[in-house]
Structures are given as C-alpha cells and as structure tokens.
Length: 315
Image (cartoon, rainbow, N blue to C red; front, side):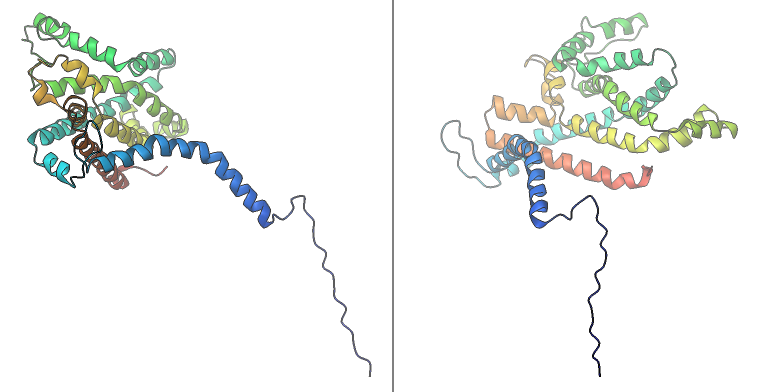
C-alpha cells in the first residue's frame, strides 16, 4: 500500500507597500506622540494645574505674610459662608452675568443683519471688534466719564429730553446695570465674529427653498437661522458666562476712588477676592474665594451642558 504524503501548499501573500508595524515601531510612534504633546502638557501643568493645587491647599491655611502658614482646616470656608459681603458679591456677579447674557440675542440679530450686507461688511465687523482689542482700563476710564453723575455725557443727553440724570457709577442701585451695559458693548465684537462664522456654515439653498415656499425674512430667521446656529449660540453663551463671572477690571476702574460710596454695594466676587488678597492680605481667605468661584463656574457650565440638550439642534 502506498502512503499519501501531504505536501504543504504555500499561499501567495499579496505584498503591499506598507510593512506590518512591529511592537518596536508602534512603541516608537507612541513615544513620538508623547514628545509632541509634552510642551503643551508641561505648559498647562505649570501655568494652570500647579497654581490651582497651590491655591486649593492655601485655602486650608491661615494668614502668614512671612514664614510658613498654619493649617486651619475649613475655617476660611466657614468664615466665607457666614460673611454677608460674600453673598452680596455673589448676587452682584450673578445679576451682572444674567444682564450680560441679554447681549447674546442682540449679537445674533446683528450678526444676521451684517451677514446680509453685500458691501462694507468688513467695516461693520471691525467697528464692533474695536472694543475687544482696546485695553479694559481705557474702556473703563472713558465710560466712567460718560456715566459721571455731575458732568457725564449720558446725563447731558438725558437733560436735553427733560429726563433727570443719575449717579450711574456712584449709586449702588445703578452700578451693576451700568457695568452690564458696558459689558454687553464690549462683548459684541467677539460674539459677532463667532456667530458670523457659524452663519457661514448655513447653506443658502435652505433660504432659497424656504423663500419659494413663501417664508419671509422673519420666518427664515426663526425657523432656519436660529436652530442651525444654536450650537454656535451655545458656545457663545458658555464663553459669556465664564467671562462675566470673572469680571473685575471694569468694576475696579469704573468705581474709581476708594471714597466712592457705591463700592460696598457694587463688589463682585472677584473684587472681593482682590480686596482680601491684596488689600487685607488674607491669603487663605482669598484662596477660599477663588476655589468657590471655580466651583460656581463649573456648576454653571455643567447646568448649561445639561440644558443644551433641550434647545441645541444637532447639525
């Protein structure tokens, strides 16, 4: 009997131009990726993460201008919560943020109007963007003169119409409203740029098709522009809330002298931090204010991300 011998069959393997990566090659590629992101990661760690950790640890220590600080636990936080000035400053910050958010719908309308301009569109964008590139100190000084209760331009204009003027930056009843008006004006430029970029992504065919169906400009704005622009609007709202809660320089410049009687009723939470850290030299207490402000910003951002599911349209 003859025994059949199996001969192994060689399969033809198609060769490609790209060799199969080995473990050494993959490992080398991973290390190159780590090296490429290392500068940015190191910069973020040094400039953001490490200062945050230092501030967080300092919030549990007492005041010490010279020498080591003493650990006091949560005493700084308990003093902060029991301080009426903190709650008043937090309320002012919240009110300012809510008022500044009114500028977002205004920016949406202006962006839509500028988008329809065929000639001179860049000029309008540059004019609105000028406050963004202007120093906040200069803006605060100019607006402090405009809103001056004795010889300000605003009261002079109101007097032409028989309307009595007010001490806009010297009366705590009006200061936050005055700050909000200036804040809306300052934020229009960057908001128009962002919203204008979002409008560029909306197809003109949608407007043409809706026009054929008889939709007017107002209906197109309500049914096409706003829904498709909602992701960009959400981004603008996030930036506006974060910047509004951190507002300090405008308040500091417009209130001016420490003799202003409206300072105590016009402080924001960042102004309270400045006063505790650089005037009263309560570093632990100021660090607690900074940590609480971070928690407020994180909570506000989380709430917005939670609510955006109900009004932001997925494009």
